[in-house]
Image (cartoon, rainbow, N blue to C red):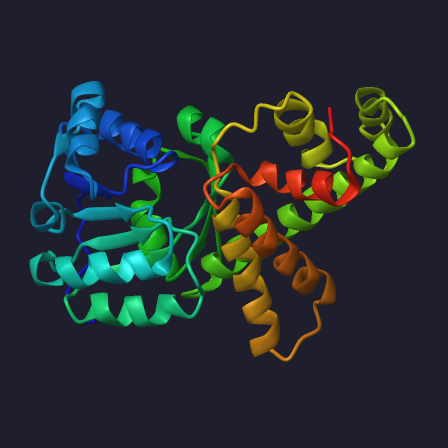
Amino acid sequence: MDTPLTETFHTTAFLGLGAMGAPMAAHLSARSRASGGQTLVWNRTPGRAQEHAAQHGSVAATLEDAAGADLIVSCLPTSAEVDEVLDAAHAHLKPGSVWVDCTSGHPDAAPRQRDQLSSAGVRFLDAPVSGGTVAAKAGTLTVMVGGPADVLDAVRPQLAFAGKVVRVGDTGAGFAVKAVNNALLAVNLWAAGEGLAILGLRGVELGAALEVINASSGRSNTTENLIPQRVLTREFPATFGLGLLAKDAGIALDMAEQARGSAPVIAQVTGLYRAASRVVGAQEDHTAALKLIEQMNGVVLR
């Protein structure tokens, strides 16, 4: 690419103000204002961008205006939505700028998106995040990045929503690690749900059982945090959609099949989460997948 990488990031833009994107954009806005710059925000529903501007000092913008920023960060549901936004923004991009995609995207989409942006003189990093809405609000997300090291070095100070930023490889590697990470979340959550259902059928007090498990070798984030805080309380707060977790597990399975690898546990769990997404509801919190286990066993985890 002949276009030199910008040396300053006076204007940033954030595309997608969902449960994760809105607090991430708030951190970018705070950093920009502290350094004398500004953060433009865009959402398919313009009202969300206007609300964000009123609450966080960002600037609600059209997609065309946001596309002209020095740094663009996107956080959308899937790579398909990123493709649509990229197509619409392409003619308005600023040569030398950087597009950081924090979507939990598909590794196969990353090289295509990189090449499309490169034709406009724009660098690309796939940089999905982990930590949920709690870490997004705290500005302590873990960011797994695929792409050139020099581009990451240039934008790293701008990623105000991050607590940890790790380059995991070339283009597409960030999306790949994110998919496997979330597949592991799905496996751990489902396995813990099955185990607790067995105990519930035996009349065991589940809170006490978790106290033992969490001091023993069966513990995980799902047993220590997700199940006690979301399942046993019956709250199931909508933070990360069940349908999106099923999508991410499917991406991990895609990678295994493309590599002619063997991942029978991920394959089985992907099918279970796809079923849970249909039966329980794709928009429900991912922990609500355990409602399907409850139906299968005639027991309520409480």
